[in-house]
Length: 127
Image (cartoon, rainbow, N blue to C red):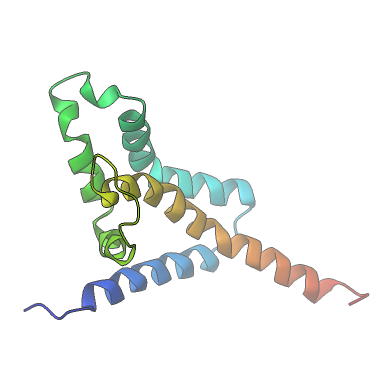
Protein backbone atom coordinates (compact mmCIF):
# COMPACT_ATOMS: atom_id res chain seq x y z
CA UNK A 1 0.00 0.00 0.00
CA UNK A 2 1.06 3.54 -0.66
CA UNK A 3 0.51 6.27 1.87
CA UNK A 4 0.97 9.73 0.34
CA UNK A 5 3.68 11.70 2.09
CA UNK A 6 5.17 8.73 3.91
CA UNK A 7 8.07 8.58 1.47
CA UNK A 8 9.00 12.17 2.36
CA UNK A 9 8.74 11.42 6.07
CA UNK A 10 10.99 8.38 5.65
CA UNK A 11 13.53 10.42 3.64
CA UNK A 12 13.62 13.01 6.44
CA UNK A 13 13.99 10.19 8.97
CA UNK A 14 16.97 8.93 6.96
CA UNK A 15 18.56 12.40 7.18
CA UNK A 16 17.86 12.49 10.90
CA UNK A 17 19.56 9.10 11.39
CA UNK A 18 22.58 10.37 9.46
CA UNK A 19 22.66 13.43 11.72
CA UNK A 20 22.48 11.27 14.86
CA UNK A 21 25.19 8.94 13.64
CA UNK A 22 27.47 11.87 12.82
CA UNK A 23 26.86 13.55 16.16
CA UNK A 24 27.31 10.33 18.14
CA UNK A 25 31.01 9.99 17.34
CA UNK A 26 33.61 12.41 18.70
CA UNK A 27 35.83 12.49 15.66
CA UNK A 28 38.20 15.19 14.51
CA UNK A 29 37.23 17.29 11.52
CA UNK A 30 39.64 15.36 9.30
CA UNK A 31 38.19 11.98 10.28
CA UNK A 32 34.62 13.28 10.00
CA UNK A 33 35.39 14.54 6.48
CA UNK A 34 37.08 11.25 5.62
CA UNK A 35 34.11 9.17 6.77
CA UNK A 36 31.71 11.40 4.84
CA UNK A 37 33.92 11.23 1.77
CA UNK A 38 34.17 7.44 1.94
CA UNK A 39 30.40 7.25 2.32
CA UNK A 40 29.65 9.50 -0.68
CA UNK A 41 32.65 8.64 -2.87
CA UNK A 42 30.69 6.46 -5.32
CA UNK A 43 28.10 9.20 -5.81
CA UNK A 44 30.78 11.87 -6.18
CA UNK A 45 32.61 9.73 -8.74
CA UNK A 46 29.43 9.10 -10.73
CA UNK A 47 28.38 12.76 -10.57
CA UNK A 48 31.75 14.07 -11.69
CA UNK A 49 32.03 11.54 -14.48
CA UNK A 50 28.61 12.54 -15.81
CA UNK A 51 29.34 16.26 -15.53
CA UNK A 52 32.72 15.87 -17.26
CA UNK A 53 31.19 13.79 -20.04
CA UNK A 54 32.95 10.55 -19.17
CA UNK A 55 29.61 8.75 -19.05
CA UNK A 56 29.74 8.32 -22.82
CA UNK A 57 33.12 6.56 -22.90
CA UNK A 58 31.85 2.97 -22.87
CA UNK A 59 28.57 1.13 -23.16
CA UNK A 60 28.54 0.40 -19.43
CA UNK A 61 28.88 4.06 -18.52
CA UNK A 62 25.46 4.64 -20.05
CA UNK A 63 24.06 3.38 -16.74
CA UNK A 64 25.85 5.96 -14.57
CA UNK A 65 22.69 8.03 -14.10
CA UNK A 66 20.75 4.91 -13.13
CA UNK A 67 23.43 3.93 -10.59
CA UNK A 68 23.38 7.47 -9.19
CA UNK A 69 19.61 7.26 -8.78
CA UNK A 70 19.99 3.95 -6.96
CA UNK A 71 22.64 5.43 -4.68
CA UNK A 72 20.31 8.29 -3.74
CA UNK A 73 17.18 6.16 -3.38
CA UNK A 74 16.64 7.08 0.31
CA UNK A 75 16.53 10.81 -0.46
CA UNK A 76 14.96 10.76 -3.94
CA UNK A 77 11.48 11.62 -2.56
CA UNK A 78 12.93 14.97 -1.49
CA UNK A 79 13.49 15.77 -5.16
CA UNK A 80 9.73 16.00 -5.60
CA UNK A 81 9.57 18.89 -3.15
CA UNK A 82 11.55 21.22 -5.38
CA UNK A 83 9.50 23.07 -7.96
CA UNK A 84 10.52 22.78 -11.59
CA UNK A 85 11.37 26.45 -12.00
CA UNK A 86 14.06 26.04 -14.61
CA UNK A 87 13.26 24.58 -18.01
CA UNK A 88 16.29 22.67 -19.24
CA UNK A 89 16.90 19.90 -21.72
CA UNK A 90 16.50 17.24 -19.00
CA UNK A 91 14.14 16.96 -16.03
CA UNK A 92 15.06 19.02 -12.97
CA UNK A 93 15.55 15.95 -10.77
CA UNK A 94 18.39 14.90 -13.07
CA UNK A 95 20.34 17.97 -11.99
CA UNK A 96 19.33 17.47 -8.37
CA UNK A 97 21.14 14.12 -8.43
CA UNK A 98 24.44 15.97 -8.70
CA UNK A 99 23.63 18.09 -5.64
CA UNK A 100 22.61 15.23 -3.34
CA UNK A 101 26.12 13.84 -2.78
CA UNK A 102 27.70 17.11 -1.56
CA UNK A 103 24.53 17.90 0.36
CA UNK A 104 24.56 14.59 2.22
CA UNK A 105 28.26 15.01 2.92
CA UNK A 106 27.54 18.46 4.36
CA UNK A 107 24.73 17.10 6.51
CA UNK A 108 27.19 14.56 7.88
CA UNK A 109 29.68 17.34 8.72
CA UNK A 110 27.24 19.77 10.36
CA UNK A 111 27.12 18.03 13.78
CA UNK A 112 30.90 18.46 14.09
CA UNK A 113 30.59 22.23 13.71
CA UNK A 114 27.68 22.31 16.13
CA UNK A 115 29.59 20.21 18.65
CA UNK A 116 32.66 22.46 18.48
CA UNK A 117 30.52 25.56 18.92
CA UNK A 118 28.86 24.07 22.02
CA UNK A 119 32.20 23.02 23.48
CA UNK A 120 33.61 26.51 23.05
CA UNK A 121 30.66 28.01 24.91
CA UNK A 122 30.82 25.38 27.61
CA UNK A 123 34.50 25.79 28.48
CA UNK A 124 34.90 29.52 27.87
CA UNK A 125 35.54 31.13 31.29
CA UNK A 126 34.70 34.60 30.00
CA UNK A 127 31.24 33.70 28.74
